[in-house]
Length: 446
Image (cartoon, rainbow, N blue to C red; front, side):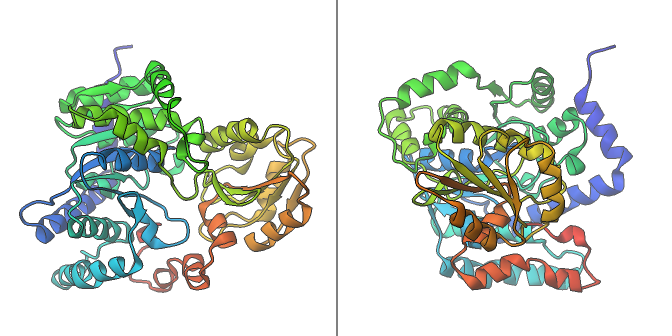
């Protein structure tokens, strides 16, 4: 067999699914035109684009705090945990509710309405509007640099519409196979599709087939390609050993060191005279809600929601808590296979409580039955709603027992969100579109 030509395979796939691929690319073009209309002189913020199966949000936070050492920096991440404003970060802090409301009402909404009046087919989606809100916030705050993560995939994600200074790929895993392709090479083509002509590309992916794909994509686009390998992670670990890490630092989780190494490689390229000591100090203080988050004493939450993230989390739970008793509260969303996702938890938990998730949540009764088949003798209990599941876990908790909520961002949100109004809005996300026959369900994105 001749050497596989992956850019050609992508072209054939687009032709085979022309109605779908052209519609996706048209949405990107529409968003690109909106950006040009709102900022005719070009948007003032230099952007760094991050894709991957896991670690996107953490890599964005490392980029944000690292770039903050050379100027004002921000990040656009998704999904949020409790409050929509958590998608927008400047200087390592979430923007205020008032700021989100202001840019929507004063700038983004008027533009979107004008666009729809001129052509009713040009109604921006939730994700597209969120990108415009992010750009408006960055412009208002004079943000020099910002990191942004894809929602799903890369090539067809709306973030692909934006001009960027660098692109980063954390890894290519099994998540979203029903959207991106059953084969690993299909998912690599999609995620690697964030490559831009002439724009430097960085990755910590190590699988040979995936690396061959991204290298071919980079070569076709004339994009310099840097693979961040294990020695770079080892070197970063040695440097970080000289810093005191806060208890809630992202870097307390060992698997975050690879994301930090990826961000550092990009920073070195983007800022040749980088003050690495200042960047590493910023890395040491980096925090992100929902990543091995200590909610209260002996209660933690982590938004790991696919097998790659759960595997990393399971290792970190064992490392940090050793022989302590552990009660895990889990829920799952989307079309993931519960038995596969939660298999790594076998043997590390004394009790697992299965519950529901508010958005695209799977039936907890079915999930309960599925994961019992792979968890051996571990007791698996069932609670219909997340608050009930957390209450059950607390009733079982004894001295030194640790409770950890994971598996679904939306389950954690429903269990812990202190704002009942936001909790209700999140639980009923998209109900107006469900009720309207004029909009397809594909417009629903969260």
